Amino acid sequence: MLEQIDLTQVNWARAQFALTAMYHWIFVPLTLGLSFLVAFFESIYVRTGNEEWKRLTKFWMTLFGINFAIGVATGIIMEFEFGTNWSNYSWMVGDIFGAPLAVEGIFAFFLEATFFAVMFFGWNRVSKGFHLFSTWMVAVGSNLSALWILVANGWMQFPTGMLFNPDTARFEMQNFWEVLFSPVAISKFTHATSSGFLLGSLFVVGISCWYLLQERHQTMAKRSIIVASVFGLLSATYVGFTGDEAAYTVAQKQPMKLAAMEGLYDGQTSAPLVAAGLINSAKLPGDNQQPFAMEIKIPGLLSLLANRDPGSFVPGINDLVFGNRQQHIIGAQEKIEKGKIALELLRTYKEARKSGDQAIADASLKAFGDYQENMGYGYLNSPSEAVPPVGIAFYAFHIMVVTGAIFPLVLLLILYFQIRDTLAYQQWLLYLGMLCIPLGYVSQQAGWVLAEVGRQPWAIYGLLPVTVANSNLTSGTVMTTFFLFLGIFTLLLIAEISILAKQINIGPEEN
Amino acid sequence: MKTGRKLWAIIFIKLFIMFAILKVFFFPDYLQTNFSNDEERAAHVFNNITQLPQDK
Image 1 (cartoon, chains in turn brown, yellow):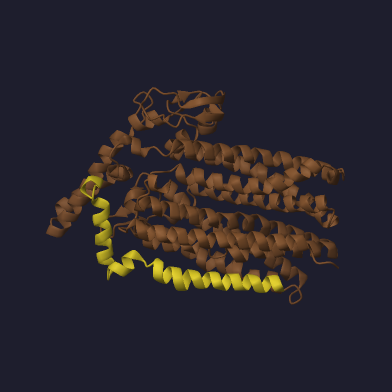
Image 2 (cartoon, rainbow over the protein chains, first blue to last red):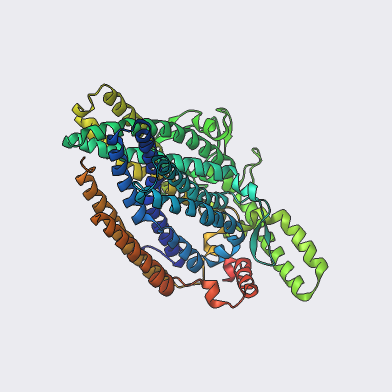
């Protein structure tokens, strides 16, 4: 099968980056959520002085430590890949990403690492209060680490606060605060971290359900369930709000991604949301085929989601590819023409600089400013290249939303039965609680697949396609490291699961 | 304690593989390796990004 797939160098590099990012994101969201849960548990211990809560805190902290230890530094591999496989891209964004990633390194990582040592090894060496403070700092530091990388990702989705300098071939930051507080960066951070809180809650609830099924460590399991299900419900509510905000931001800043994730080809006023559907994979922009083999629609909901107005117009793929004068939408074809002018102006600028003709250089650079926002379209050969893979975006979005809707219902039922102290008798619900752990990971991965596949073909939205962002390497080199990573990460995942399973089986230390 | 030792071992082996093997042998920085100064790197990237797909 593999030889039938056209995986050229750039696609191998994309596959390798996707593999690394997806494995990395197995470890990260649990760290984000479990760190706060451990802080809650320890806060209760410090407040009540009850040793049972200390035992409980130490148990979940051990699981947090295992996940942290195995996952730590897996993200650095992505930086290796930037330098090797994506050298054009990494050179061009160096000025933008340098600041947020440096802040991460100096501030968040050291905050996390310093207090991490106190949290794990300081139980009998520092006061209760300082230990608790350290645990909270680990939670805050972990989440701050995520902030900076998500700001960088947000910028790739919606490049702002910068200007392209042709002399250095770099996007140079003009306004740090515009980059940090870009609406896409904010919605990325809030949605990704809150979904991590939810996953942490599902993890604690799911394992506690297993203990109840096994009739072991029941007091600890019940206490853990109460705290984690309340935190999970609050997080799920927040995930809903941030998800809504993320969808609104996508609609405003990346309308093509919204159209793809909903399989919307022809724009509509009062556009319906496709709640479930089977995509017609043969459908192409501009043809007469139906986009779905079957679908269930909710009238007006997509317009409400996209523009906060159920009667508003939502552009479809065809509007964005071919343009829609009535709705004042510029099509990809027109953007391609503008993009080619932008690239031509850059070449003229460079040649004028070389020949010492400053007047032409200045005029070219000034004119380039008017075309810069469509610069990336100049690399496309046809307007349909601006369309991301619709099927993947559609299914990823719907898997994320459907699983995301199941979690609060399960958590609510678990909390309800636990408050009535009858949860241990609801075997079906305990199994469902356990099932929510893998489903939580599926939901997390689906979210990132949507975010990254949905913005194709761009490495930097509208400015740099992935085909231009990569290095001049052979696919053999990238293939080798792809399979190397596949092996290493799979081993790490096996180690994670087996060590976690062993520790869960042992349970909390006995008094 | 046994788990702790195992985790430390995993951390060190992982970091060794990442920095002493992968980074050194498989992931050289393309621009650092092939060009001697920033001016050359900028010129190389500029040429790459101003080349249209049909010219490649």
